[in-house]
Structures are given as structure tokens and as C-alpha cells.
Image 1 (cartoon, rainbow, N blue to C red):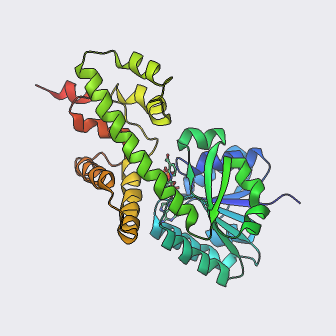
Image 2: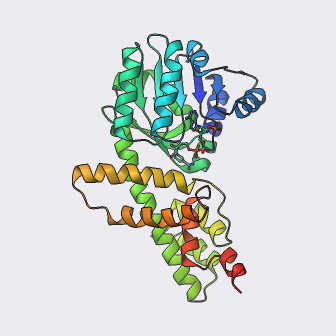
Image 3: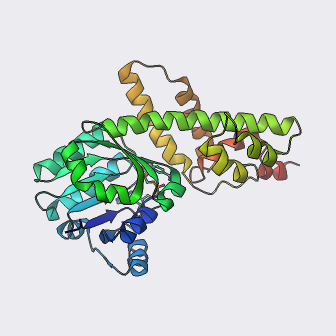
Length: 295
Ligand code: NAP
């Protein structure tokens, strides 16, 4: 019998992931805090939206979540537990701390289910294409049992160790994203000052050793002053706060994380938290939008 999955959290990442599960014939139902989103997606996919997380849990073998932050994951777990059947596996795709993964796993295991932390990387493009990189913590046998639902949303599934190690790997990924964002913003500002055509710069350097996902996907929009998410800056700020706490516990200095947190805090105070992380370029004071504002 194919697994029946229920998906909770139909945001920029969750909705396209749920669509890929439906394409693979594995999606039973969906739930979203703002009900309209769940009803619209359910109508599009020809399934029913669940009334509550517990209702969703009653109908599924696997429950996948992709919500914003640590408190949200624990809130959703509490709400689904009354409907959880023994043997059900809860998979959390949100980016949260390893501690939260361990707390969530303890709650689910106490109710007779199992839990995997399985944060993802690859952006909304990877979510749409079903090619996300998935970093998994938890029991390897549980991972094998639910592999078909992960294969429906991901291109690379890596078991990283016990509960929390998926999130630890994702924290490393988020530090890399901060560095890449800083490097791309500095390089593009430098290139513009040298009088270069930035579209042509992005095109050619993307083919060489400095090429990277962020430059290729976000470079062309950020140089036009378009910062539609994508990945919301406030969410990356939340991730880097987690990285800072983990780094402090590990005794590792993370200057890049500190600088990026300070930069994001400035942008959030100016009202840019819901923009894509490429809005970091605004701090160069040289995006088309900023130039238009100059007297
Ligand atoms: P998003 O578009 O802002 O969507 C967030 C989703 O979480 C929405 O469905 C929201 O419901 C739901 N939610 C938030 N708090 C909730 C709560 N307390 N109870 C129930 N539902 C709640 O965010 P996203 O970009 O999809 O990101 C989701 C997660 O994936 C985050 O942890 C993020 O760090 C991670 N991530 C994002 C990307 C990316 O490129 N965007 C890539 C990798 C990982 P409403 O509709 O009611 O607001």
C-alpha cells in the first residue's frame, strides 16, 4: 500500500512540496493555519483539506510539516498529537534548532509515533522541481520506511545521524548562504562601480569557478531592484540566530553570522523583512530602487 501523507504549512516551500507529493500519488490531505490556502490547494489537487492538524493526523501514515520557526513546529506538534496513530512518522522540513527537533521527537515518540528532522535546501525553485537537498536526523529504519515521500520532494536525501543532526547540517548550510549573499552583494556593487554591465558579468562568471546557485537565480533580479521572495530575509535572520547559539555552545567564532545578523536587523527595522534575502544589496545604497529615490 502506498504511504498516505498529510502536509502542514503551505507557504512558499510547503505548497510546491505538497504538489509534488500529489503528483507521486502520496498526498492524502493538507492543513494550513490560514484555511483559504489549504482549501485552494486541496481544490486544485482534487483532495480534501483537513479541519485541524489532529484530523489530518487521523488520516495519514506520514505527516510532513514546513512552518516558520521553532515555536510554530512545537505548536503544530501539540495540535496534531490528539489524532496521531501509533506508528505514524512526523517529518519536519522547517528550519529550526536541533533542540527543537529533540523536543518534537520526544513528544511524538511518547505518543507512539516516530519523528525525523528533515530540513531542506534548494529554494522555492528546488521545491517546485522536486529536487531539494534533504538533511535527515533520526532512526535510519524510519527513514527507509518513509523514503518514498522524501523522494517525491527531494533529489538528494542524506542521513546525517541522530535526531537534531539534520538541523545541525542545515545550520552549516545557512552560514554558507550568509557568506554567499555577502560576497554576491559586495561583488555586484564593486562591478557596478567599475562600470560593468552586471547582466553580462553574472552570465559569464556563473560559468566559472565563482558560479553559484544564488548568483544565478537571484543575481538577475537583485540588480533590477526586485527582491520578491524566494527566501524571506526575516526567516534567514531566524536561522542565523539559531546558528549563533549553536556556534556559541560549540565555542566557534562566526564573524560572518554576526555581521549578517546586524545587516538583516537594519533592513528589518526599515521594513524589508518580508523581502528576499537578496535585499541585502539595498545596504550598498546602489540598487535601482535606491537610485530612483535619490534627489
Ligand atoms: P512562508 O512562505 O512564510 O510559509 C510559512 C508557513 O508556515 C505558512 O504556511 C504559515 O501559515 C505556516 N505557519 C507559521 N507559523 C505557524 C503556526 N504557528 N502554526 C501553523 N502554521 C504556521 O515560509 P517558507 O519560505 O515556506 O519557509 C518555511 C520553512 O522552510 C522555514 O522554516 C524556512 O526557514 C524554511 N526554508 C525556506 C526556504 C525558502 O527558500 N523559502 C528554503 C529552505 C527552507 P499561514 O499561511 O497561516 O501564515
